[in-house]
Structure formats: C-alpha cells, structure tokens
Length: 362
Image 1: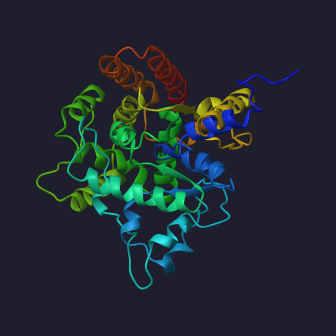
Image 2: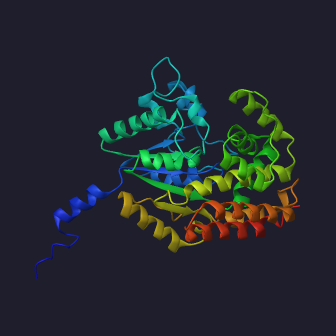
Image 3: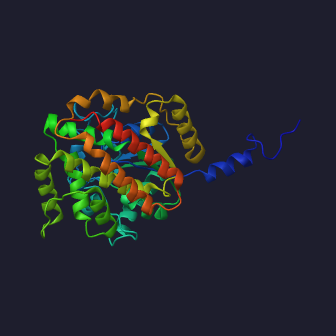
C-alpha cells in the first residue's frame, strides 16, 4: 500500500521537520545546579559545539595558553571532561592576546529589568558571532550559562531560533553544594555570588521586592564600582551569617525561576532526573523533537539523596527557620508569574522538598 503524504518516510516531510528544528541550544542554569553535567551530555554529541559559560568574566582575560589548564578540580563536583572547559573558544582567541573576541566584562553581571539594557546589543552581537561561526562548520552551537536567567526574556526575543532550556534544582540542594565548598574548602564564591548579583541590581524594583520578601541583608554598596563591590561581597561571604546567606540565595533563585516562567521551551527538573529513568527518556524526546539532538541523560545521579546524606555537614544554619523564606519566595512568584499554574506548581514542589531537606540542618 502506498505511503500517505504524512508519513515520516516522506522526504519532503523530513525536510520540513529539519527546517523547523531549533538551530542552537541555550542552557539557562544556576551555580551548583548540575548545569555543567547537562552541558557535558550535549557536548559529547558529534554534531555539537558546546560553549562553556559564555558570559563568564574569565573570558575577558583568557588566552590560548590558558585554555588547556581549564579543567575540573577535585572539589568542583563536575564530570570528567575529555577537553578543557573553554576549548571551543580557541577560534575566537588570538595568539599573544587576551580575551575572547566580542566579549565584554560587563556581560558577566546578570540583569533583571523588563527591557534590555544598553549593553545588550553588544551581547547579542557577541553570541550571534559564536552561533554563526559554529553553523558555518555545520554544527549546532550549545551554550551553558550561569548568568543569563535574568536576561532570559531578552535572549528569547533576540534568539527565537534557539531552543531555550531552563535547568531547575531545588534551592536547598543547590545552596548546600556551594555552602559546603565554602565551609570545607574556603571557597566563598558561591556564597558571595547571590549577594553580588542582588546588590548590584538592587535599584531594580523587582529585585528590591525579592530582597524584601526574603528578608535579605546585603553588604553596604556605598558608591563602589562593580569590581570593588564584588570583592566586598566575597569578604562578606567569608563571615556571613548562614541564615542570611541562604535567604540571599533563595531571593536570587526565585528571581531566576520567575524569568524562566513562560520563556523556556523545555524545563529540566534536576531533582526528578536523578530519580526517574522515564523522566530522562522524556527529556531525550523533548530534545529530539525540538533540536534533533539526542543527549543521553541515563547516567544522572540522585542529587536529592546526596543532599540528605550530607545534612550533618550543613553547620551554621538553622534549617527549621527556612520554611518562612521558602513560603515568602513562593508568594513572590505567585504575585508575578501570571496564569502559568503548571510552573507555579513545579516551584511549589521545589519548596516543599526544600522544607524537608533544610529541616535536617542544624
């Protein structure tokens, strides 16, 4: 019997499907969210060129000589990588010079305003160049961001041909990963980061409201430059009261979650991914349908269980007091997210899980 015009074996149908696929993948993640692991699953695909942290301030000073040393440390918790983190930037670096072509240090600070700032045209041009140069090689560009969620609606509008993927992990597990690095290895970066982002955005009404809802105390900003304030936040983080550090983290987490609502084409729930092979298969299908890529998520670890096992190491925080900040953050989200009840329910489940996990912290 002849095949109908709607058959998947019809060459014209295959061509139409191919032309409808997204031409790039933007992974919008947070620090310690397992976003690097997700990125690594896409990076291993032959058809992909996967750029790591294209907004990182490290790129301002990167040189060709530095690239080979950009590998996971013993404390990073990142997966083993066949190539250095920044290997894909080699074509965009010049011998004897520092800095990735088109990158500006100002790109490294996330923004949460409803309209693009004056730096956004340069940021758009920088990312477009990475996309176009990669496409010329017949490959799909994949970007793993940690500093993009606030600007996600801007990027969604500027790059409609890209598949925008949000990576969401419950705030207790995500915070615990960074807190333990600070407590055990004297690495305050992940504790300082929320203070820095919130502090440098506190003039924005939305950010100010999240700060107030979550009861965050910020380091004084005075008239410090961005770099000086970043240094002040790192110093502040080394002696920050644990409950306040967690409130700051949740305030930033909920702001990023708010920007994901309605702006992502696919949401990756890291907590479910490690516990359900069926969910991993669903994510694979989502990528195949929208981008034609087939990342294997079958090796995901159960990170929720790892958080439970590490509860005894979470010192300096009264976990029982964290229910109030979870409730406040959810209230903030509901006040702004509109009619996206499905997304609100996902975040509500994250807060319920966070209540359970933080209850064990003392």
